[in-house]
Amino acid sequence: MRIDASLAILASLSGVAAFWRLECRGRLAIARLDPLISPGTASLHAHAIHGSSGFNAAATYEDLRNGDCTSCAVTQDMSAYWAPTLYFKHANGSYEEVQQIGGMLAYYMLNKDLKDINKQITAFPNNFRMIAGDSTRRNYSVTGGYSVFEADPPKSRWAEFQQVNQHDLAQRATGFNCLNYNVAAEGALMRHYLPDKAYLDAHCSEGVRFEIAFPSCWNGVDVSTPNHKSHVAYPDLVLNGNCPEGFDVKLPTLMYETIWATHAFNSVPGEFVISNGDTQGFGYHADFMSGWDSEFLQAAVNQCTNLTGRIQDCPLFDVISEDQQRQCKMAAPAILTSEKVTGIIGDSLPGGVVIQYGPEPATGGSNAHTVPVSVAVPTVSYTPGTTASEGNYLPGGVFKESPTSTSVSSSTSSSVSSLSSSAEAEVNALAEPSPSPTPTPIPSDPPVPEGYDLVRTDYVTNGNVVSKIVVIETVEYVVMTTEVVTVTATPEVNKVRRDVHLHHHRHHHGLH
Ligand SMILES: *[C@@H]1O[C@H](CO)[C@@H](O)[C@H](O)[C@H]1NC(C)=O
Ligand SMILES: *[C@@H]1O[C@H](CO)[C@@H](O)[C@H](O)[C@H]1NC(C)=O
Ligand SMILES: *[C@@H]1O[C@H](CO)[C@@H](O)[C@H](O)[C@H]1NC(C)=O
Image (cartoon, rainbow, N blue to C red; front, side, top):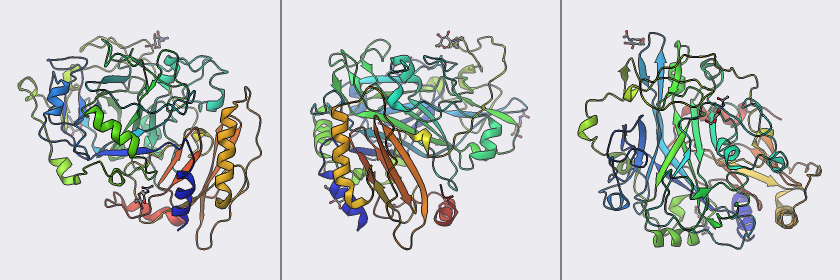
C-alpha cells in the first residue's frame, strides 16, 4: 500500500528518471574476442560476452541483428555487452577462473541532461558503439591528488575541485562493491579499486560486484570513432548532471554490473587478477555495441518509464525466461577452441597476458616484461551505505532479491505524506543551483511503521538539498536522481532468490 502511494506521488513529478534493469542471465562465452579493439582476430585478453549470438571476432551491427538468440532478457535487444573476466592466481602460479554469478545486468537509466531537463533522451542510433574505461590504466589519478582509498568528495563539490574533466569522471565511473548481505549495502560506483585479498576475505562474504558506467552525452554525429570513445562524454556527475559542450545529445545511461565469486577463494593464498593483467581494477573497462533497432529503442525510451525498473512493466518488451537466456550461446572461433579460459587454466592468463601493477600504463601486449612493484594497500575501509553514497545511491541490487520489502522516504521535511511538496522544493532548488553548498538541516525521521525494524538511514546530498532515505526491512532498489529522490521497492516476490543469506536481513541490520 505504502509503496504504491510513494510511486504514485513520484510518478506525477516532472523529471523523474526512469530506468530498466536489463538482465542478461546467460553468457554467450568467455573468449578472447573484441570486435571493436581487435576486429577479425583474437583479442589481447579474455572477456565475458553477453547478448546477441551474432557476436563474433569481427561482428557488425548486421551480424548482431541477425543473431539467432540473445542471452539477455528482451528479445528486441540484440546488443552485445562485454567486459574482462576475473581470475585467481594461486600461490603455486596456476590461474583459475573465478565464477561469475547470475550473468550480467545492464542498467538503462533515462537520466536527463541537467542543463536542459526538457530535452528528451535519444535512443542509441543503429550501429552505435562505445567503450568505457581504459585497459592500460594502472593508477588512480584525479585532479587534486585524491587517493583512491579516500571516499569521493560529495558530488556537489566536484566542480569546485576541478574534478569534472573527462579523465577524472572516467575513473569515477567504475565501482568494486564488496558484497556482504548481512550488512547494509554499499553504494554503487563508490570504491574505485578492487580490494586486496585480505580485505575481500575479511569483509566480502558474497563476492564483489564490478560496476562500470558508460558516457551518456553524445556528439550527435558519429556512431563511433576510431578509439570508440571520442564521440561520447560523461555528464559532470558521471551518471547524471550536465553534458559538456559539443556533446549535447543525451543518450540512455548504460551501466554494467557483474558479480564475481571471490569468496570461493576465501583463505586460499594467492591474488585476484582481471583478465587484462590488472590486480587493482584501474584498467577495468567495458564495451557496448548496440543491436537495438533505434526506432524501437526510442519508443521504449519514451514509453517505458515505470519507476519499478522492471522490464516486465514495459509493454513493448518481449521478455524471455532465464532458461532461454542461458541457452543462448556462441561458438568460439577456430583460433580459440583450444584455449582454456575456464577452470584451472594453467600458469598464465588467456593470451599470455602478464600482470602489470603500474603505476605507469600497461604496455598492453602479451609477455611484456614487468617487475612487480609493491601494491598499495587500502588504508580506508568504506562504511556501508552512508556518506559514501552521497548523490550516487543506485539500484545496485542486481541479483539480490528478497521476499518482501518496503521503504519509506523523506526529503527535507519529514514523512512520506509530505514527499510531494519537498520533492518539488528540490526541483526548484535545482533550477537555481547555489555555487557553494550550504549546510541543510538534516530531515527528521519519518515514523517507522509498527512491526518494522529500522534497517538504516542514508543521506543523499545534491547541491544544497539533503535528502534522507530511511530503510525499513530490506530495501530492494533505491534510485537517486539529480532531479528528485525516487525510492522504489519491488512490490512482489522476484522469482529467483539467489542466496539464503538474505534471511538475515530483518533482524541483523545495525541501527545507525
Ligand atoms: C596449484 O594449486 C591449485 C590449488 O590447489 C591446484 O588446483 C593446481 O593444480 C596447482 N597447480 C599445479 C601446477 O600444481
Ligand atoms: C508499473 O508497474 C506495476 C507492476 O509492477 C503496475 O502495477 C503499475 O500500474 C505500473 N505503473 C504505471 C504507471 O504503468
Ligand atoms: C597514471 O596513469 C596515467 C594514465 O594511464 C598515465 O598517463 C600516468 O603516467 C600514470 N602515472 C604514473 C605515475 O605512472
